[in-house]
Length: 244
Image (cartoon, rainbow, N blue to C red; front, side, top):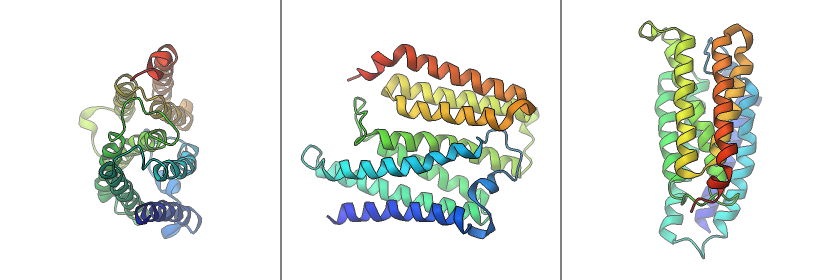
């Protein structure tokens, strides 16, 4: 009883902080407005992060499933998942506060901690678990945090006017996109995770939309890699959904 209450309060807390961050807004700027202050090429259009609202709804379903899975999941595993989920919400809240109050170097630290915590939670599920009340909400959340982590790092590097070791910003952005694609394909092949990889498609399209014809190299690369992930999902879907 106490475990599910703490998890529910944690979810409510992160939802309320997100709403406050963008409606008050915290420190006078919305989350997306702060992201738009710098010309970061690996930054999806603002609508991409509206996926967070869907993620919170899916996490509510996940909590319902968590509550009703006591008979099939060991208590130690349930306790571990509860701790990881609660900590992930805490890290997310701290990240938002740091972001809105300008502690950008620290945002990388807490984004990395959030990513590591969600990865640990994700890996508590077997590869065959692709259910709404199981791994799917965690997978979609993890996918968005992967994208946010790369965008966060790129933002801070741009803030500090990093030279890029002689490589241009568009080229570095394509490198980031390629790295992100490798992550998506890894989870497709090794974890049969279409949901997580679909988040990368959503984000890559957002990057292409934001950059448009002004950064045609980046936009073309984002759309090409979107197509690559989509093709793998299409041709491997039967195999992926039948993984045991």
